Length: 524
Image (cartoon, rainbow, N blue to C red; front, top):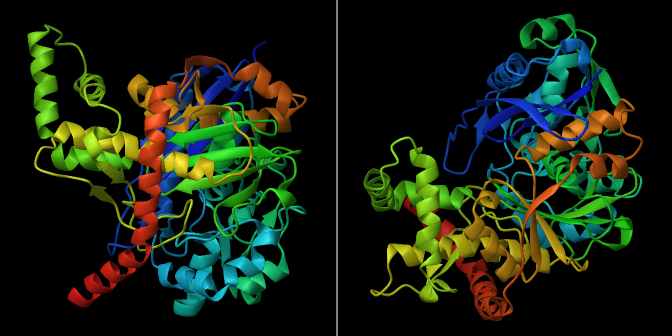
């Protein structure tokens, strides 16, 4: 009899449910989009009920197309977008929309924390540098501006909200609250840290913490009816997406590294000594990972959406050229999307390293940037343009700008890394993966599969249910590499010079971004 595990990955804009066998093969998946609303240019929210409905439909789709009998599904676990606030009242009903990690309403507060030493005061305990969308910053903003919303409330995170819908139990694991209020060694809330943020007096809104592989509960009869899951199926707590994705690509032992080139650009490096691995100070996070390791993490707020934005605004000629190639090539069955990205790879390959002198900084998130520096007013830019430059130069600059941003994060973490496991949509492009290898000066390996967050959640479910004896065993059995890219030393030497300029520009812009934001506010 075969056994199967389900991982649910509640991303920022897509909820996914994937079914895996014990060798890590993805049997089937379901997915549903969730709209993000922006009440103001600096705010980002989601309707919690819509997220729950999307989760139930994604699970249904996953199960219906799998051909797997319900009795052979042994456990389920969850992962999801971190930070923000997902508030429920005493009856388990949402208190307004979820405030997302990309939200910028607490930006001025976070800037103040950095300026007055608040961040430094707590950093050695928590290993976290807050940004505008950090849960503790949003909680403090709510306390100061909407205190009524906290009365009788329980703060959850995205995966916890879906877990509550499945089981009726409102708890979290150490990974989500680690971005704001726990001790990195004890893995529990720390009153000194909470007091530093000014939220100790509202500590009662924070949920109980249980281990990631701890049993949250079982699927209720109501949830079974909505999802098709068997009633009584064990649901294990799970982790936030940063740690789950790290598991899903095989980050287990100290020095193992992951770079996610997706909605956010996440860099993680595993350590077994979290108390002494928090450099650089006041930025990034130290997140509980396996039972023996934590991960030092940096997270660019905006990664592949930089390319989405560029194509939305300037991509029409590229699309027309790709379509002309499809017609002339006699390939009418080829999807336009796949052909476009293949064509973009060709265009990018035609431009030399350094994009003929154009450098792109991809700080396009409404909440600014959070790694390897924190600035709510940070904004994107092209530098070095003149009239000789083309849209092809600018396209490659976007590809390189994302890679330079990832390098900025990785080089800030003083833990030796030789190999980077790359995942996310950017890993699907061989050209982009090679740019990463050359820019980072490290070997890039790409694991088999696509749903690494869901796979990490499934691994946790397997450990909780006893299908795997340890994290090491689970990774060895379920994670397999399919492609690798070795850096070209000549290209790396060229990127070293462009990277030095990249860093100088963003350092020089720190005060200018603030001036720009002030000018924008004055013009409103």
